[in-house]
Amino acid sequence: MTLQVTGRAVRRGDAAYEAARRALKWDAGVPDRYPEVIVHAAAADEVPAALGLARREGLHVTVRSGGHAWGGNSIRDGVLVLDVSELNATVIDRDALTASAQPGVQGAHLDEALRQQGLYFPVGHCTGVCLGGYLLQGGIGWNGKQYGPACGHVTGLEVVTADGQARLVDDSHDPDLFCASKGSGPGFFAVVTRFHLRVYPRSKVTMSSGYLYPAECFDDVYGFAHEIGPKTPAEINLIYYRDARVRADGPIIGLQATAFAVTEEEARDQLAVYESSPARDKVIVTRLHELTDTTVLTRQGTDSHCFPTGRYLADNMWTSAPFQSLKPGIKDILSRLPAPPSHMVWISWGYENGPKRPPMPFSEDDFYYALYGACDGPAGDNAIREWATEGMRSMEPFATGMALGDENTQNRPPGGRVRVTKDTDSFRRLGEVRSAYDPDGLFFAPW
Image (cartoon, rainbow, N blue to C red; front, side, top):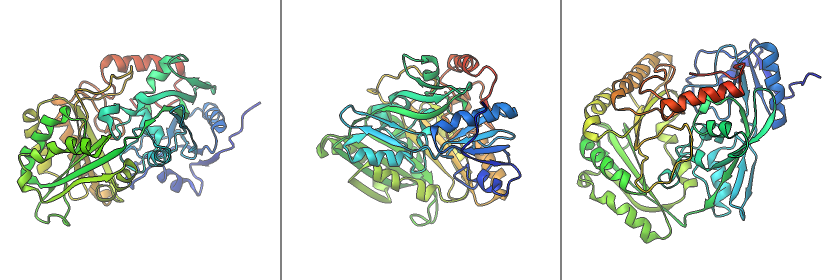
């Protein structure tokens, strides 16, 4: 008997098609690529039928959960897009310190549900990020220095493989497939319908300090952050951007540090180091020792002032290079910073006392640099593409990899130092596992 697609299916040429195609991506920069059919699954048991439809019609499959990938990975010519954003159920077992969540669950919603029970999971920083893409891409989340990538806290997956079979995969069942999920992102070759997570008691105190510096302090602020970053457990990130509300005559550097601690005294001790910045006397705005929570931080995060409605293109690199080596290239990139809300993000990810990583293809290193070019309409696309792409291309000698989610593989395909996995062996192994589980290439391979 042929399985029937019970989820909503929109085909190219239907009246609702263009609206459905554009809804696959969170911003206005929808690529000029046209899927053949978009299937919205309302339940996990609809997934095998959607894959069956793709096989019968000879279509590759892409999967979309939240649409927050800057490159619009699910939007490909002639494919079947399986939208699983409506799979958004969460179950929490407080006593067992476990949770399960479907791919359409937003990290902010999971964080709030866990907060109500005194629990924690390292969800992403932006409100619109859903767990599907976030966890498959590795997961650069809150308190990552102490927890590592979020995918390291996934204990199992419920998936549907290319043959239409539902499976529970973990370290004991299909371990190669389970390992492949931890950082392969849009290159994963199965549909996740539920993640099983290990959760933790929530920190009693979450405290943040923030500083805004004029751009002239670049050398001092970034050099200082590179030096202290791997030595402190506090989360630290920098944003280089323009905001006329703060400073009309030039860009600014925003530094935010967040401590996750047992006591307020411990949190203040972690944040005290930022007062020793060599540029401290040049600060424009200061916020010290604000008690908050990741739920609030996520909702207040960079979404509002750095990511308003518009068209975006992102590019990034992982690096462990010393600041003095990076400085000339980064300063050149910033000298050509496009109009707001274009900006650059820097994250201190490595930590000397960080957790041991499980086997996974996720690419990471001590420091993360990402460029976000933004414009209002198609006329600005070439400018932001050139700025982000050529900027990061100029830094390739210092790069050790590329983080998925903010990747720019359509303009800088993987190869050499442009890696989407942590090393060449991981990339090769990923291909071998793909061949075993998807021998006919049902799932679209983005690289």
